[in-house]
Structure formats: C-alpha cells, structure tokens
Length: 396
Ligand code: ACO
Image 1 (cartoon, rainbow, N blue to C red):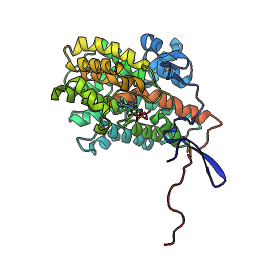
Image 2 (image 1 turned 90 degrees about the horizontal axis):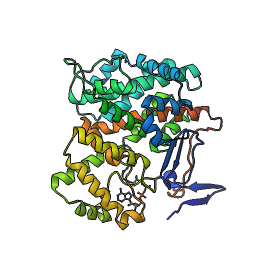
Image 3 (image 1 turned 180 degrees about the vertical axis):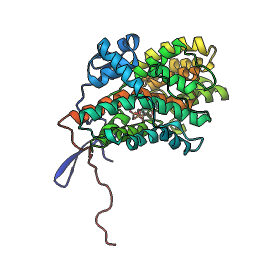
Image 4 (image 1 turned 90 degrees about the vertical axis):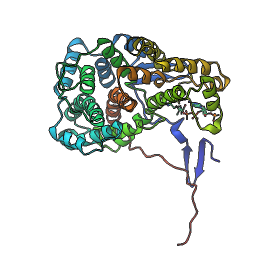
C-alpha cells in the first residue's frame, strides 16, 4: 500500500497525504490550536476567557476583523446586523418548494447558496465594500434562514424578525415563537446558546472551513463558498456528530443497554460502532470546549430538563472511556459535541436542528477565513495532486 510520504511519479514528487494530516493549506492568524495540550485561542484570546466574558457578536467581530471591537464598534456591528435581518419575500417561496421532511441542513445550504441570486450586487471578493455588505448580510440572514428551515420542517408559519432583539435572541424567537403569542425569552437560555455559538465560532482548518477556502480559492463568491462549507459540516463525522451523539444516547436508554455493554461493542471493531462525540483529528487531549460545555450542560439540564437520564448515561460513558486502555492508548477524549446535544435538547431543539446550530456558530469563522484567504497574496487556486493507481494505457 501507499504510506504517507513522498511518491516519485514521472519527473515530479508529490506528497501523498490522505486527509491532509500533515499538509498546511493556509497561513492563518485567526485561530490557534495546540491539540496535545488542549489549547484553543481566537486571535490570541483563550477560549475560556471568551466563553466567560464575551458575546457571540463580539467574538464574531474579533474573528473577522482581528481585534475586539470598542464599545462604539460593537454597537454599530450589532445595529448593522439587526438592520439586515429581513429576507426578500421571494426567498420564502423558495422554502415552499422543499418537501416537508427536508433536513434543515440541506435547506440551509441551498438557501445560503440562493442568497447569491438575490444579492448579485455583493459577489466580488476583491471589492471591499461588497465584501463588507455580504459579511453583514450573512451574519444577519443565516440565523433567519436556519430558523425558517426549522419552521418549514414542522409546518409552522414563518415569523418576521424583530429588530429590537439581537442575533441570538432573534434566532430563538424565530425558531420557537408563534404568531399568536408574544415569545418570552429565558435569559439563561439566551446566555447558554450565545456561549455555545462562541465555542463553535472557529476551529482553524477543519473540513468545512477548508472547503470554504478551497471553493473560494477559485474566487467563487462568499455565499456559494459558505454554502459548500455547510454541506461539509452536514457529514456525520463532522458537524453531524452532535445529532449522532443524542441518537446514540437515546438508543442506549431505550434499549436499556448498560454503558459497559455499549463500550464493549465500541471496542469490537467489527461492530463498526464508534463512541460518537469522542475523538478528534487535532485534540489528543480533553477538548477545551468540551470542558466548558459539560459545566453548562449540568446547569441548563438542572434548570430545564431535570432528570434527563441521558446526561447520566453520557457521564458514565465518559468515565468508562477515560479509564479504558482502548481510549487512553488512542488518546480519545470527549469533543465539543459530546454534551452539546443534551443542552440543545433541553432547550427544545430537535436533533435535526443541532447541526444548523453548529453552522450558525461557525459562520463568523467561515467568513473570517474566506476573507483572510482572499486577502493573502500567496493564495492560489486549491488543486491537490494525486497518486494514479489505475490501468496503464489500454486500446479501445
Ligand atoms: N470511538 C471508537 N474508536 C474510535 C473513535 C470513536 N469515537 N474515534 C477514533 N477511534 C479509533 C479508530 O478506530 C482508530 O483506531 P485504530 O488505530 O485501532 O484503527 C483510532 O481511534 C484513530 O481514529 P481515526 O478514525 O484514524 O482518527 P481520525 O483523526 O481520522 O478521526 C474523528 C477523527 C473522525 C473525529 C473520529 O475520532 C470519529 O469518528 N469520532 C466520532 C465522530 C465524532 O465525534 N465526530 C466529531 C468530530 S469533532 C467536530 O467535528 C466538532
């Protein structure tokens, strides 16, 4: 077989590196990760400090513009985003065309791609003003589209955004509100969701972000590039994991499997069962985000979902894994998604909305990385090489 390394083919040497385990595709000043030590920083600020003290909007600004905003800059950013929440009415017709049981991630990626048809005036990646307005449009409209994708899936009417609310509040109201009643925000839920969005806001060159960069490297517009990123995030090994974790916990609960028996199944490779929410390409230590999420899960579940047996199951699975040679040897620890699904579930989100929530959080990271890629003079069109293993010349 072909190992990782250099393979000489014809007169060129190419590096065979499946999964890009050792290939850097970008130089980036946005996010720093030390996977061995379990460190994550946005623009130099530790994730723990941002999760504790900042807001999602402030972190989005930091990621995209490189510095924390001043008070005035933050107000302007927030107001700008509130001002652009309205969608063209025709976008709603677009929603009507999808089947009722469409997965909200599929709807969201299509809708974000469709934004490029409605906002053809802001597609030039090299025009500063256009990049600015498309940044605001994405930040304002993606939460609305995500909420609408949900409303569509449950057959409820779409509400108009309420611009007296900020991004996170508006999203909650558009998701859970109904036209006949005033929606009351629960501040603990707003704060917890805002914090979870911060934790998901960037993670350097993960699968979806690399996808945004690769698509954008052809100078494709930002809406189409981010739509591609949303599709990458949809996969169960990436953003789909939080949904998979909850399904796994449901199954263990409903079938009455003991965590011990489940772990045996996971360790038996032939079963093909993985402990979802465990393991990470980069973290070979406890994912620093998972630590923060675990604390919030306990707090929110105590308030909203007291007695959720699944938290108990998750904690027992974690305890088993951390003391099991299989997991220790492979350096498998809980990742950010191990506990997020439980919180989302307590907040009232069905599992199908978990990945759209991840997309909402990751949005500023995608925007920041797209913009950094475009601004970097060394960027070239992404075009990996291959090692050809097919037939030699044959005659037809
Ligand atoms: N359960 C059981 N075994 C696992 C798990 C798991 N969750 N994750 C990895 N392993 C094992 C593999 O079987 C492999 O064992 P081997 O060396 O005996 O063959 C070893 O650990 C290394 O795993 P790889 O799949 O090679 O690691 P990779 O870096 O390619 O994959 C990934 C990382 C995809 C996250 C993997 O750990 C996984 O599938 N986890 C479950 C899904 C998940 O939680 N994804 C979320 C990722 S985080 C995010 O997107 C926010």
